[in-house]
Length: 356
Ligand code: SF4
Image (cartoon, rainbow, N blue to C red; front, side, top):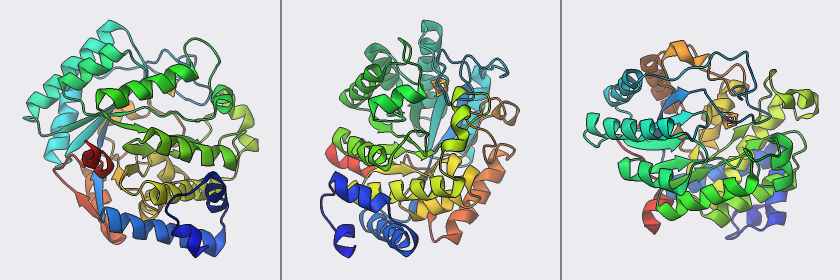
């Protein structure tokens, strides 16, 4: 066990073994991942103030509560003023970075609007706010335009790196194309974005081998950041039909922690998100993820009046919290686990800055 935890290069068999650990052995894995994080990085937690720009989406992923075919959702787009207010709030709260997330649209009105907003946020903050985008699959031209406007990080989760599993959680049609998703990730890497990806953990039909392959996928792509969290079934989606076939909430949470910990051993210098979904399954979920090797938190800045409309999964944590409450709550929560929030900084991935 100790030999495995200190191995320089983990192979697939090693990953399957580590992801299968239980009880005290699992605790030892999480403790080792924390040691590695503190050795290669530090005890700082980076913030990305999250702005959920719109829940209008052209896709209908089988797990997603805001899929276009769910007509029970009230659709919204934030106004320019609301977005800029969120950015100002990020400045006032000393978050060094924001992340703009949205349902996927590729029409020109949308892509131009994002360019305009990225430029306006850069201007408003005098270049001080780092900008991460998470706006799905786009053409190379659009990705380039947003990069040139000032966005420097992009998160595009693969959700499942096994093509067969991908098509069990997405429709198999021209709007949901696995190869297209892979090619977008490659384009983002090529353009010089700090590129992040990630997966859901505890999906129906998913095996521990699939999860080991997901970890190998992150390493192969040499991504700068990873965001992964437990699958939480949403009642208004087709995948809900399999809700009784997935691991228990506790097991999904434990597997998420093991995935974070093993990835920290494999890629010690990347940024890794402690997802809000962790806290939805377990009130201490985000703290546990930080203690297992994650180093990024995404406090929500979306106006409270729209948060209920952006529920990719149900019962999302902190939906009712005001941004300033969220900020002081996080500060206290991180101090309680001997971590410290890094304010007024972009919090770039060390893995990326060292290689560029
Ligand atoms: S997961 Fe994203 S792309 Fe898929 S339906 Fe939901 S918002 Fe749209």
